[in-house]
Image 1: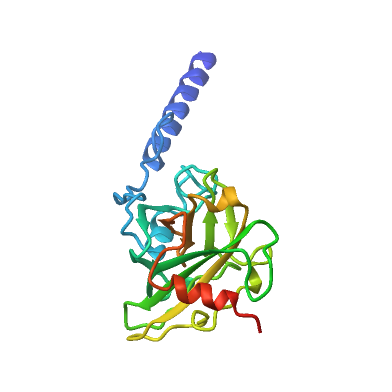
Image 2: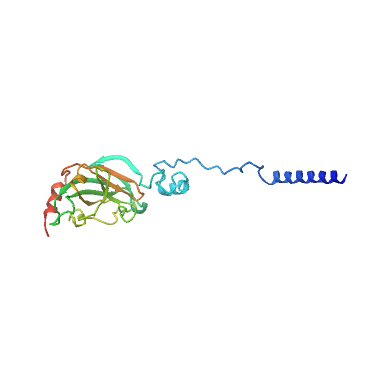
Length: 236
């Protein structure tokens, strides 16, 4: 009899404990409901940097890469422009918008008496104009941005490499923040082999890390080509 009473008591105790567990939490084997997240398309190109960081930076898919599962290469504006076509770009540190327009390209064997380390200097003149009420500066090569030349084999070469830092054009040397309602002229110079120069692409990575690209002619072209060639040949 005592054995039956003890066994019955044990069963009642187990049932009571099971009932408490059902009231205090989710049933065993079931996951608690998760908080529903808002529907966000992290591939939406209209997102600015702040919106993407708030909604997408924590996504496990592509985390630690370029956000799309790649190896961290900057996103690319898929439009391949040609000389004279403008691109709207984000200013340095995400401030302001700059319209960048490469206008002329020159291939030169020397600049102010200085020879290239490789075969040729390639110099591209660029018109830079803010399109908002905020001053804007071009992105710095010390950060995520700057100018590059992409050779036909895909190699990216930085502006100012080799001996191209010696290329200085008096009328195309603006730097610093550009004020609204104005524009400036700059020049980007590259020291390249003949194979790298022929059929290359000019690339600008803006303040949000987006790469904009222009297909470059294979010979001197543009309205400022003669002026640039004359400036490059002047010594002193």
